[in-house]
Length: 328
Image (spheres, rainbow, N blue to C red):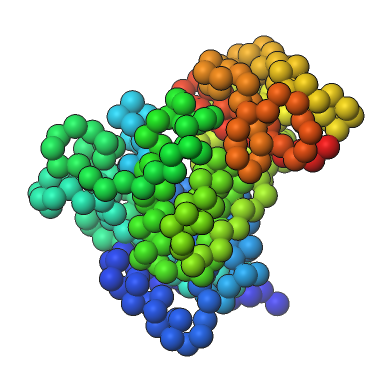
């Protein structure tokens, strides 16, 4: 028998979201939060299924966070399909209880100068960017957000080298989501490995009473790591991008067979990706950091324990990240 779809409650107001969460807690229910930037794919849906295993009520936030984009990055072209996202959420067994879809979570001072990437035409139209200048909140202009959360050491390597404002935007907006939704447990995908570790550290350092769970990276059938940005790849670029997962798989196999020299392992990945026409991001800034300790994210020269291979590369105008954990 086909299970009936569940229509989630859509909330955009911060106070109403907080009131809903507190009403659930008054009933003795635990709350799981899955933060997303929308354009949902199977990786996001797997997080929601994990949330059902660990909590009684599930909240999915959909918010493209301008604070983690610099003015030169792809905020204006980040894909969005709010109504399609709602349909996907309805298809999940058990559905979700609430979609928290705020118009803007940053303070720009004067509302007339609100430069949010969302319009104000209502919840059902969130994700359309009509009539707005799409900019990052780190733009100059005098009305920007002033208060930021930073995880100073963990944000510096890997993606932090080429995206220096990204993780302060992530940590700040996740802090705000935690303060508004007040979850008991929150779920993050390990595809964004550095982000997951940063949030874990932030929760520990700031004494949030929230359990942070990292869910396994989800891949397309051909091996490409699932990402909302994949839709922007041309067919040729997408085929070439498979060099990332293929080379990581080969490097993992080599490490498990006794090859422990990180430079040699990752040089093989670099050659494979560059040979397919990709532009390596991390290789340009710190080759030694392609293999990092899972707990500290510090570079290691030899694999002596659990480690993770991390890669970022450009194919055309799309920057892709991928990683692969290994326990020799």
